[in-house]
Length: 341
Image (cartoon, rainbow, N blue to C red; front, side):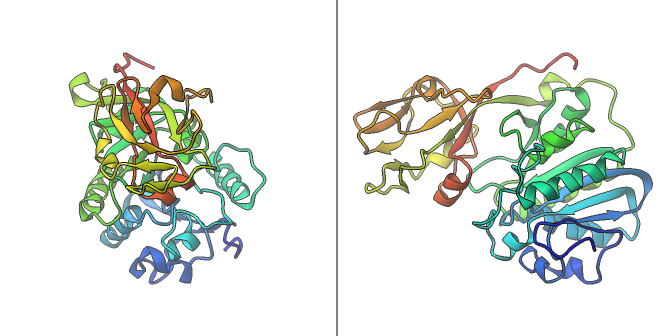
């Protein structure tokens, strides 16, 4: 092992005995912190998979447990990163004194989590990865979908192997998939809520297909096989404002049905909830360049927050803790399928 700190990368060349018997909340009993396990396979070019970058998103680990129990020898070399085990022990996205494990991969930052990220990326620089898959859950009502950070064909093939719904984004720019997309086809999987058994089954099927994939198809992804969206803004609640759901005491009182808006093309005038402070800003929206664009997407009238233009949100949730830690939602628009790199 390379270290025993919660935020120092441990590197192993085999699975510790009994590791696959542990649910996510007990991994800290065997792993001292984020751990990269390098397992040989019949094809030597590694497939990189990361799970538990957020400690409360357990589908990836549950799926990998099942896959690794099934294969005495893998069809392809596998690099498995098991992320925030200390947060998983408490079933939290990340602990209060930690940076978000999926916002640390830009190369900047001087915290211990950022140092761990640089350690991993440096190690992976020496290895020609076949592809990279980062597995996540979300807390709202969302379909299963895949996210990519480049629009070339290999990335689209890797994404549509999981879902016809594909989201292209460049912000937030500290995510692991974006860092690895400079080196190999990379994808983030959003697998619904962590307590949904279908999410585990879907990921098992997908990872097994990726492990057996010898090369990416040379043909382009057909337009009828993909619904491609582009994230154009991230929406947050200002820190000084309180958040509630059907709570008239909160500064921002969200509708209890708001998470059902995900991946729906909302018309002008859709109500997101109520606001009760006296200012003219209830939600903050920033585009990919960091510009404040809330006035483009929202208007305030009679104490309510309405959409000003047709929008399609994703990641809307009723979990106010997640809203505070991350964001309220992302706003997307449809994107034509590119005809090449």
